[in-house]
Length: 459
Image 1 (cartoon, rainbow, N blue to C red):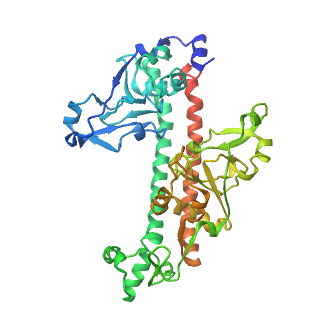
Image 2: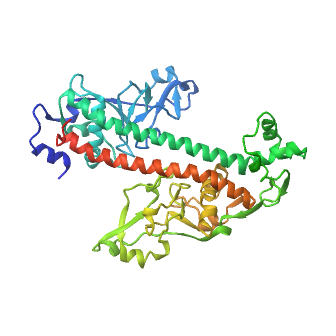
Image 3: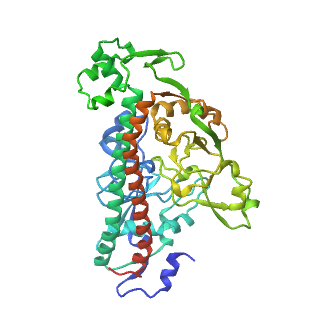
């Protein structure tokens, strides 16, 4: 029995009503202007698809594509207004967001608006969030799962008076605001880490600065960056600046210039082991108690977060059939099949967990020295591009463990790496603290949501 069915059987507070959701909302269809008509694209009107809000955040204000007024007029797409809801209805069904500036959208989504003077959109967002499982259960389609306009007629929803709708949305909204703020802070911290990594180990800014100061030659390939550095005053402390060399040497492996004294090696050089998991047979798990977290690619976000909602496998299967892929804290994970190139670090609470064959894990010889360094290399454009070039297109796109082990990276001198780790450790500590706060706030929001929607907790 679903939560919605249970609610119908409860005694609701005075003034609360159970209605068919389809009767109290208006549903707006989207569309896509013709791609081959350039005059329809790259205009001033944001145009969103599910990939723009497939991140579990409440608000959406940035999109990857835009259309022109002519594209709007010549297609079936519509403009959603501030506060209206967008829901993915085909393929990846049930993703949800609230619009905070006018934008158009494609036909794989619906725009949703609450009935005036009966259902406010801020409450509707949480009502839909509460109803997602029910919508998914009755979605259908020959090829893709699909939510139709008629689907909403089969969802019974609890509608409190407007004053309580506002109060419920306010409480849950404050939690979502804090979640989004923490994620924005983390995006800033991640950008800081990646910017520093690129400056030191890809663009070689401190080495260029030292070479310019010493009057040493700058290789032609690095002259554009050197010209930029001439106009910038280095912000590194002198003691840190002195750790870097002031010359470049040509590396025959990478076919590029690198700092003098630095080396090129591969990931396998600093790994204790590189392996991957497997998927247990259903017969192995059917009649056993499951208590070991089991990671799949879908559990790793594009931002490297690992979901708390993991499948579980039996301890016996974990210790025997899957003993090769028992994960340890600080293992570096990279997805190698399906959605390739997602990267994460195993946190303490997932020590002694397991993973399937689409995830490779890198267990480092020297965790303290190389964990953050390895993580930054793997998420860098340099390595992501190399991985993309090695993808084998089979039934499911994949890269091999051998490919991961042979990825070439640049190693600085020990003192530079030590200084790098000091700086990045502070950033990563803040990132992890914020991630845990997000998980705590998300759990609180998801606990309160059904209790507030059902009237079990009054505000």
